[in-house]
Amino acid sequence: MNNKLAQLILTSSIMLTPYVSAVELYDDGTNNVTIGGFIDARVIHTQGQTEIVNGASRISFDFSRKLKNQWTALALLEWGVNPVGSSDILYNNRFESIQDEFLYNRLGYVGIAHEKYGQVTIGKQWGAWYDVVYSTNYSLVWDGNAAGVYTYNKDDGAINGTGRGDKLLQYRNSYGDFSFAAQVQFKNNDFYTCDIEAISESACQTLWENGSNIAQQVEFNSTYGAAVTYAVNDDLTLTAGFNRGELNVNYTSGRVQSVNDFIYGAGVTWGNFDSDGVYFAANINKNENHDTDNLGRLIKDAVGLESLLSYKFDNDIRTFIAYNVFDAGTDYVIQPNFNADPNDNFKRQFSVLGVHYLFDADTIVYIEARKDFSDFSSADKEQEYQMGLSEDDGIAIGFHYNL
Image (cartoon, rainbow, N blue to C red; front, side):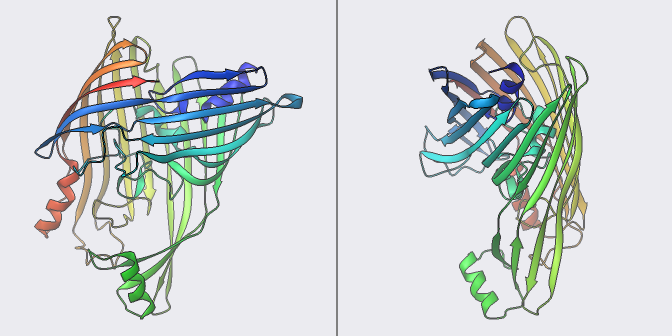
């Protein structure tokens, strides 16, 4: 397999995600199978509790097959693994997927690639938008939650295709120093929402079917997006992209409201996080109806910024500091929605300080601390308290083992 084709396949594989290695299991000259992933466990203290938790551990199998005329078939299966059992602690940010199952689906796609014609993949995979912002996602515990990736109250970005998107058709290619990705998410999701804080979807659907004016039916259908990366030189990389979808809200009165889910932005990266010396990355985005606040209310518009500055010493110690802010301001909630106060303020803001010791590139002991500066001020103090629950200060000590 030539270098350009191998790089193209690698870009959309698990290696795009920080701290994932791969080991070759089989290669007969035509078929190749590698296993990848990591096990991460940590002791964390946050929100007045200390607990041992899983650190988004995962295992993956990457398949490729050489075909005629320089074509290559490829496939990937990745499962999240919960080696320490499920936990009911409230987390801030998507640093663990809380699951009852020992294995749960993270990624899964199949496709075909060619050095000249590019790569096409179908399935659950990292969205094109992640190309724009992934370079700030290197904290092992408190990764950023301001880049519009882990949407809908810190989920995995599956619904709108900006994170590990469901049902994606994606195309990738590169020309010289430019590489790009374009995608369409073919899906049809209908669900029901009610202006009641504690209600099941089935009960909400019943209210809708009975004509209640506090119930709405929401149609969230296909999305599309694209991203471009420009390697200016060996150190400097620039990225830009967007993602767009549409929600149709059907009211029992017969009124239909169309709402665009839209995010766009750019990023800059200097250096290599795994190399000695300075590494810096930052990205900024503007988004509309793309994410929710900590009560699940859709945010009309917001600005997100993520930044990370790191230095790796030649004694295998790496330090970093990250700053993230997701600012929706006041009057950010679409009405009607939980009888929201129009003066509610939503500003998720925090910093992370980390020290990693690398026994080798695949074995890391770390300590990371988070300081929260968020502002969720509201006339409803109980609501303000609930909004801040998942954004507390914290400290974690852990061990990260790449397979």
